[in-house]
Length: 294
Image 1 (cartoon, rainbow, N blue to C red):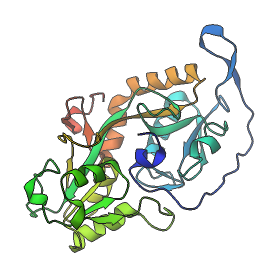
Image 2: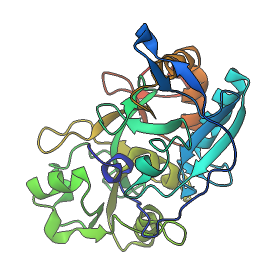
Image 3: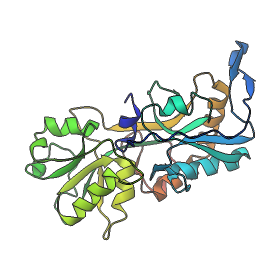
């Protein structure tokens, strides 16, 4: 998963809105090993987070996303003020935010993405199949299930599970939704869920955090099944950590410590937003097992 489009699963804005960094000097800190001086934190007294202003359930400029809540948790633990550099998660997001030293951490980044230096993961989740209760699709666990043949399944074009659907011959009846949208005025995930509840589609496939967040907003709530048993196509399960600059070794170690020390609180925030958490054996992590690490 080499780019932000794949990291989020969908929802990239068409409009690139530049944000201006207000005030604050740059703090120079010794890099680990004494190899010289590297730029670490923009302001050592402030936790500055790089975030999208219109990207729920992850973040928004009202502080309503789970990454906002994680920022609040970490700022409290660090005894720092919390501030944001908001910029749409489109092309240039890392370059205009973290790489430009306008902020110091991206709260959600997949393990293995080389655009940034990643921390240890703080959650593990997967793309998921969303279905209505009573549809007969609630216990479908793979896209190769024969019950999906001939069904109209919503899929965000260009996301990894689209390949799995193609392999299983499901694309002929699929309903695609755009990957690139202006999230200030629309949401492909929300539109897909509305189409599911109205009967325009029979099931939906979404990135886990989006699936869980929107599925619980319906009445009755929709059923969410993480697709952890796929044997063909690209992997659909990912570990998510935080992103920092490559030179910021001390900062990375500090964040790793915060993740380790606060995993139960982190899990609670994620579960409160409906994120389908998985352990290393692909078993769901619920409230009763929320102390587990990814």
